[in-house]
Image 1: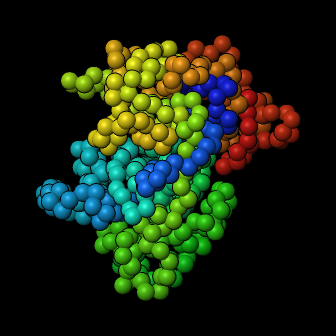
Image 2: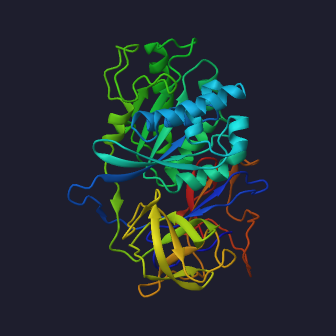
Image 3: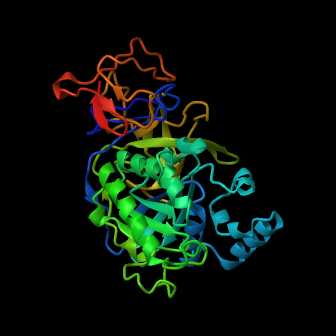
Length: 421
């Protein structure tokens, strides 16, 4: 169990995820935060964090990389370099995916392992893209990426067989949509990708079939499907990404970029105490220790004295950067790295929460109420009195897991949410 959050700071309970309740191999906590005012200042563009999710090989990295390229986030020379390198190892179709898949292992295997961050701009907004892995082996990294997002782009492979695999009982299309909603990502755009595939050939009938089936599942999960836009695209050819596709004249809706600009601006609680959960901690030569993460509430400036809980480490912020640019102030929604004084990478770790030492700093919790969702379990129902093994890395005097009696819940079924204490 990673660092517990402050009992009286967050207005909503954290969320637990059991990837497989038989062995309870993965347990994650993500804190919900209070609401505030949208961050729209003068002529400044709205900043939104987008997570790109979906089944393995649905074309997430290719579509995202192509969009970044089309929006000017990467130059033509770099794309040509990627194309040449990909061709040398027999993967010429991976040139756009390589914009995000930076790790050597990812390039050789052709799948995304870690999350990748990239920035691009539209006429209305500045987007930070979080490209999450679709492979089941890396679901932990997908959860890390999704927990930082304001909205999700669900990429679905429209080709025959691939769509059916993703939407099946064990497919990542279902799992990622469910995780995104449970993590609080309630805004979604769905991309019906690979419309150029020979088995689809830009057919409206296939698009309509996918919209019908996916809409039914998203509604079951909890999404307001009337506000979810479905865009038929080709991540490889660029159809309906920025410009309307001549191959699909039957589609009258917005392009992907237009749909992203239509998303409601996120709420930014900058008036609350600083809370910045750490995604990772790096040691950079010539600079020192650099924690990274997303500001959830409050603000942070160079010179601020901050405390990391539960490590109980207090230090001063020397500088703050986002996308390699210096910031005079980090506000909610910003994915930042910040240099701190006299702190070793061994002193703090992923999962620690950073707060302002002089304004209600984060504290360890004695207990908390959590929201639990079971993704997979060998029993049909979890009833009151069931014993669960919770793997963790803190000392626990007593594990007590029970369904809250006042709720009168008879059991907890797969894909059902309830509260435990």
